[in-house]
Amino acid sequence: MRRLLLVAAWLLSVGAALAQESVFDYENALATSQAVIGGPVGQHEFVTAEGDRISLVELRGKPLVISMVYTSCYQICPMTTRYLADVIDKARDALGDTSFNVALVGFDSPMDTPAAMAYFGDRQGVGDDGWYLLSGTPAAVDALARQTGFLFYPSPSGFDHLIQATIVDADGIVYRQVYGQVFDTPLLVDPLIELVLGRAPPEQPLLDNLVARIKLFCTTYDPATDGYYFDYSLFVGMAIGFIIIALTGNFVVRSWWHH
Image 1 (tube, rainbow, N blue to C red):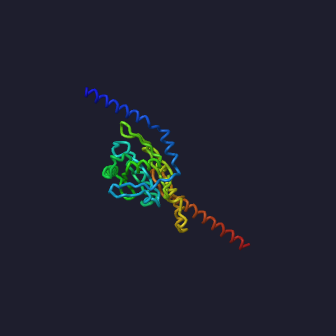
Image 2: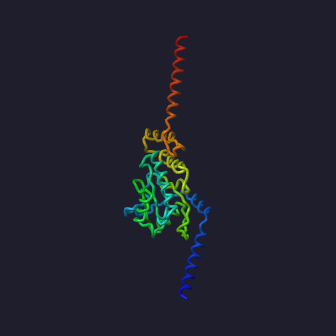
């Protein structure tokens, strides 16, 4: 009798899990994710892998890339994080090491402790300066997930969720969503270039503003190397044009003078 009860309980749990699995709908998840663009991300408090408390408002002043993972994931989240780290390195090569921050947030609150996040980050090769590995209470995680449009549901394999990286601007406003385990590098880097180099604050000196806009215009993606480089061809073309104009002007003046 006891064995029958245990089997019945197991069947009920499996049925509940399968029913829960069917809750996730990709189209709805994508629509929810897109709907939050232009909305704010609040000053939620989390705990870093080192055990320090930090509010997301402390990370304002520069763009922030948010990726939500769960540390007990054995395949997808690690692959996604490693690929994200590669693209982040390319973005920093183009923009500078301190131009933006990255927050890796564990959304499975009971399991994603600071120690678990530290171990996960170490295994994926992230956690250096500019990376924040964050744990939070269920309330903080749910609030952040809602404001970044991130839906997740328990399933027999762990969690079902959309794979996304959320780009937040310096004022805490959701600017862009990037989807997939693997994605084209410009999908993440180009929005960061726009935010870092394309929006000079009013108090920024004119020279700094000019330099930032030149860098924005001349930073070019090379698909052959999957990286970014500063394109000097504009200046070469300007120099050649200036020389041609100068020579033409000199010829006209000399002709006029002789006549």
